[in-house]
Length: 73
Image (cartoon, rainbow, N blue to C red; front, top):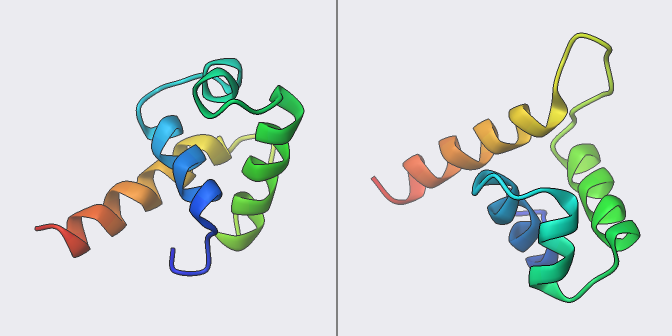
């Protein structure tokens, strides 16, 4: 998680809160396309390859929660 930018962390935090891309864009005052780019970048940094039977958004949030548990027990 250390290699994520501050903005990517903000996007991932909002994803963990269950927000849609549109809601994240409104919260962070960015376009929905900008949010999609940040999500794509964080998927890459977390090494979450696209696959038809895997939800990368859920895996990213799971990684976020694991990281939070390690750093804030």
